Amino acid sequence: MSSTEADCLFCKIVLGDIPSTPVYETGLTYAFRDINAQAEIHVLVVPRQHYEDAAVLASEDPALLAEVMLAGVEVAKQEGIDESGYRMVFNTGPDAGRTVFHAHLHVLGGEQLGLFGRPYRTG
Image (cartoon, rainbow, N blue to C red; front, side, top):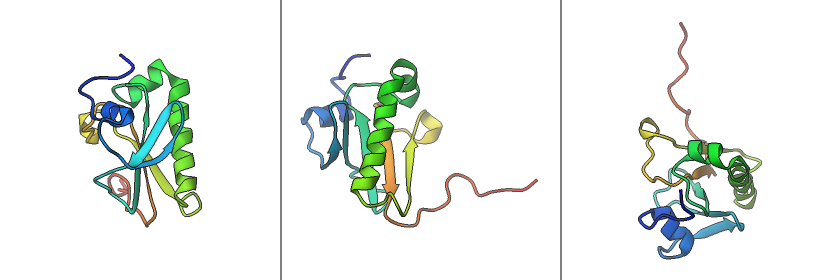
């Protein structure tokens, strides 16, 4: 693991090499609007340091994982969805639909979100 990866899309965004629309940032995290929004509000929160996914981040730097989560809460407050409700999601591994190999938290809200995962089944 290095602080940044030359071929990583989100590392390039954090460095400013690829433009983004910033929403919130700290010395350890950077939050920006998702260009393929899946809800009225869809913000990605990334650690500035490169970690492949949330599992690696949790294992190698749990304090930074907590900072990413706290940044997600601040994004929700700043975007005005903290009272109405929001969803925070990490996609880890191929079955989750992960497409960028840099740990990132999705913060979604601003509208009624659909059910998450499969519908409830009995029996």
